[in-house]
Length: 551
Image (tube, rainbow, N blue to C red; front, side, top):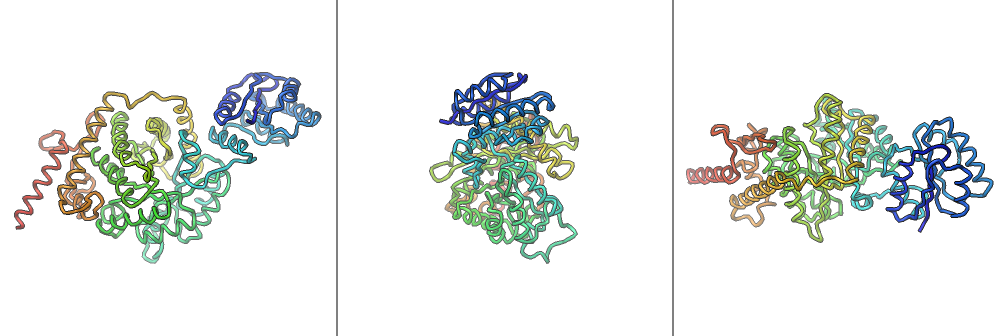
């Protein structure tokens, strides 16, 4: 067992940082000894010579100009007593650390800017006899190395490819993120392999204008520094297998985010019909499963962002996971987007997410493992940037109640302008501050009676919706993964959303209303909430009447 000795030196009595460092060291299996505040260099050296620790950490958090003479004296004593074989570490405020960097004494200097993750990674490197941090190259290993501390993810896609590459470099060097999600512009997602069909007046709209595989390779190369973040990228909406293969070869795509029912004529993001796109998405899930690449099916929030009621959000979250499992996916990343619709209350939002978790994780077995990813809902961010920072912190705090493996940070500025490095850096620091406090111990918000009642209600309602999909397709062997049945459920309105009104490929007649912080199906004529039994049974009754008329 390696031993770490630490002290605040000189006249410094601020020991919170030292104690925090030693706490993490103990958790990582080190023997630790705290010498106390205001320890003189003479006493420090005496104890080091007596105890012979493997690592010594010294801290100073007062005036930078006073740090120099102390470090001069420390350097002189290390040399005099031949203590260079010990690893020396330094911690302090940023200005004091700038002074410490001038001395060739310290294996690492901690100024707090990289957060607790940096401390733990560093300690693990020493414990494993590696004199630098080690970073896992695949998402599951990186999750397992840090949990219960969540990984941080953020998307990045600036209208300029050069600016995107430079921002990736800065993010990697800053070590603020574990995962960078590359956001290509819509032209890249739809026309990457036939760019002559693209409207180039829209280049850079919605993301980075990546046009060649080498563009992705340059982005990947820019990330090979700092904490070597995992890269991933949005899926294509056309030529999906070529796009997936290219992402695997160029950026070693960390995991695939694949919709089940979207990226087609339903949302206008591609030319595919609904049945074909569902079938192709399933095959794409299987393609990744065969290569042991984790999969996220970003389905439920597409419905909720279009104001579908909470029951549809819960049911489609289950359908997404169910289809991933049926396609052979072993590691499933379930995304829980909070704050949709924006008027949902935190209490009812938590209940909805707990209902999703219960249904999704009922599918877990030895061949299907679920990892939780939470994120703020983009539509909930106000344009007032100060209020938006509060919304970011509030959403991350609520998400931590779900014990996530990944926190997908959304920059506070996104409702105002696209995030560059500065905004991403600030947003991640806000999120890390919230996460650090939450890791100290949260109250069990799931035990709230209203949360539990709403969760159980949503599970019951979602199960009725899911059962109704069987009722529209008695001859299908597996209606929940049958593309034609799922497309029919959309056409009939069993799966529906108010924003689909007028869409030729959906019913678009669903009305919803937020009442007491929860989103319900609503009858605007009778002015009342509809149960799922009432809503679905009416749809199926009309279907039977229409079929009778045809006969």
